Image 1 (cartoon, rainbow, N blue to C red):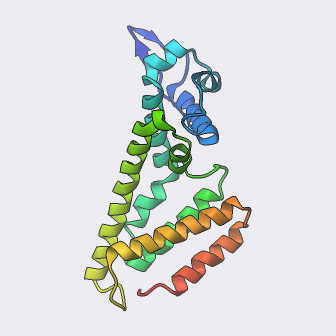
Image 2 (cartoon, rainbow, N blue to C red):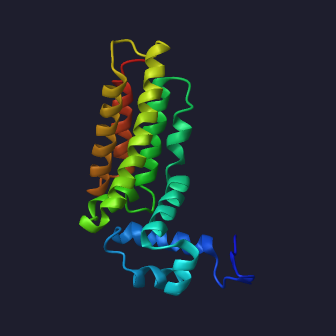
Image 3 (cartoon, rainbow, N blue to C red):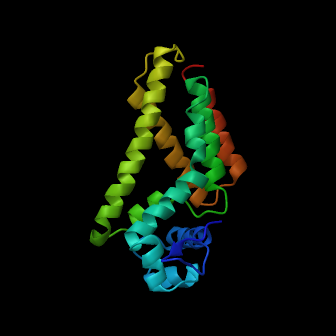
Length: 198
């Protein structure tokens, strides 16, 4: 727990708790629909306190996105450390399913991007940049798998990464339609059974 000080005077709220509350608002409403009133009420602070502690709404969202990635997307970084490309895919699939079937309403980046209008173009670009960085990390890991002989058929790192992305999106769509976790796990099982390598 961190209490930040302003000119020697401690803030009267916990910044970590306030940021977590902001994350929940952005998660449920998206970026554009989350008003400053929604945010300050959920965070239990005034607008001046929000600006002093976090900057403007865009800066607050970026900090909330950092928190989201640290808490909900840590499985992606862990998956990349798996010993084979198939093990990477399995960890990504299981982590994705665990994430989307938790108490969160979906991927924060996707929610924010879909709810950004013209005024949110900077946020949309920021999210897409983060997503592309993660995607490139997976492409690089798949290329390493190719180089190390993890695949039993000729495959391109870009193509197998896009395939995984398509499976993730399909699983997320089915989850949003109420398909139970056990059935989503069967999709992961089928994907891994068809995986072209070790």
